Amino acid sequence: MRFACFDPADTADMGCDCSLCGDQPQVEPVVPRRTALAGIGAAFAALTLAPSATEAAPMRLPATRGLSFVNVNTGESWNGVYWRDGKLDDAAGKAIARILRDHRTGAHARLNVPLLDALWRVGNRLDADEPWRILSAYRTARSQNQIRRVEKTAARRSMHMLGRAVDVTMLGRSPNAIASVAGREKIGGIGNYGKRGFVHLDTGPYRIWRR
Ligand SMILES: [Zn+2]
Image (tube, rainbow, N blue to C red; front, top):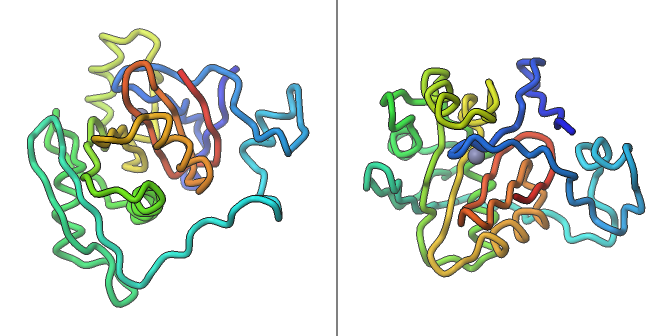
């Protein structure tokens, strides 16, 4: 099975890989039992289902929001408020774009605020007091191709290439715990790479997979 993972601005098949790695979520999505859907329709339904009345509503975002990051590839860190008075803080945006840059090429992506908000929501639910540890964020096509030369199963395109995905860990929080909370918040794509010790989060359609 190959997941449809469409970006509104680009209807090409994004492949939805999580290639720190090169893995692709070619597994059945985990669909909540209460959806009572099965078979071939389940994968599609997982992309489109709205939360039911019995599910917790996604967390409301406060007017001021902060994050804390460490990029394990560069050793760089950042901690601060990225959203205040209803808009992105310019200086914070630049600092975060730098932290999330493609560490192989140095290229920055356009900052994806929904991705920051997803990390804020998940971190808040986790009652986190540790920074997000970034294993991989933005990737240029060149970097993705570099990964593909090593990982033959890597997708040609990925949400990382849109600046809409991160592979993360957090000290004191297991991949299962992070993925579970992200699933409850329905932040988008959630890949639990528990055996490899990290979680892929993206702001594409809601879907969950485990490797
Ligand atoms: Zn990933």
